Amino acid sequence: MEDLSLWIYIAMFGVAFVAGFVDAIAGGGGLITIPMLMAVGLPPHAALATNKFQALCGTAMASWHFARSGLLDFRSVIIPSLWVFVCSGLGSLAVLSISPEYLRAVIPFLLIAIFLYVLFSPKLGESDRDAKLKPFIFYFIFGAAIGFYDGFLGPGTGSFWTFALVAILGLEMKKAVAQTKVLNLASNVFSFIVFAFSGNILWLLGITMAIAQIIGARLGAAMVVKKEVHFVKKVFLIAVFASICKLIYDLVK
Image (tube, rainbow, N blue to C red; front, side, top):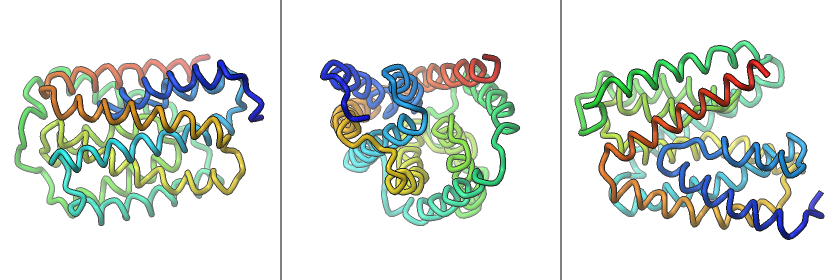
């Protein structure tokens, strides 16, 4: 399957760059890369596996840049990340015996609720606020729920994390985006390990896209640090809206 033309590698390099840039700001990079991987002829399992590898590289770069910029303190998310990793593993195992179809119908409506709440809450995420839950309780509950969901199904995970961190834990939007990257990284590691051992990753294409992802994620993370909260919120709303459209399309097609 690695006998792809040079033009496909060049095209997917560009696709991965754009996806890495957008994903570092607001998530949703998979909405760009997965359809394009399937469009160039990859079967679904190979597209998902290759996407997971290259996206993981971009997420790691964004996390590193956010930490360097001061938006993220790795020490504060080490234990939550380990908990998310465990719960995402449970979700990945659960999908082997439980059909995720019923959940697919619910997720678009949850994202619509998030979209409307953020849209009509202009002050949301502009600055740190008092948390509605203690951090330990927050990470225990949401780490279990969102981590399990990411391993079980996945679409919209970044949006759920960013919204929860802003609305429940009271973080400023840019800090929430930074933390989302690390928590996403933790929940994706387990599924990457599974994909790596399954033999479904197209490594040459994945490495090509990973390089582009790293560059795009670096620039996207720098944009989050540089721009005002309003810009980040606008990109977040666009990413959530795109996720809603994609998920509804998948349901009705």
